[in-house]
Length: 130
Image (cartoon, rainbow, N blue to C red; front, side):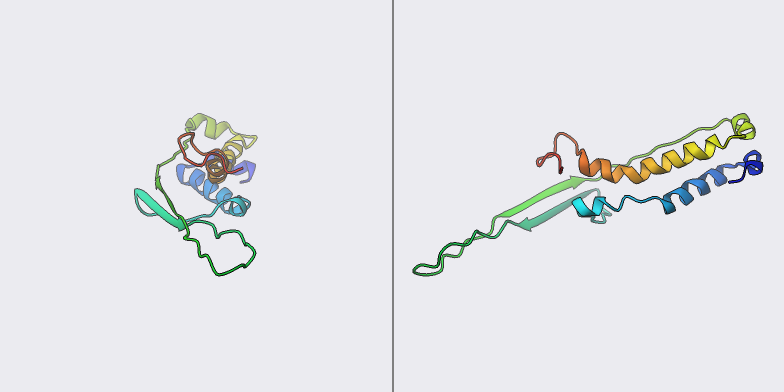
């Protein structure tokens, strides 16, 4: 946003700034350490089979091992972050600080999945992923 446009900041303009900042941000590294799964339910249950057994020397015959059944349930939660600007601050913002704070909020939105992956709540069974 250009300095001469700061006097024309509107609620929709701020929303547009947030969406533009979200489009340019990235938390791509989260996919390297965690699996992303879409969810549309209040609770999601996931099941998976345990690890394959270690190899052993083949003597006598086969000894198949059953895979352990594992699973967990995640309760979805809603999160929010809001900024409130006074109209006088919007009119007087010659240095673009509103844009800076809006971008900061967008960065926090983008960082949230990473924070959830790196620092899960203490009551989770598996603890931290890193």
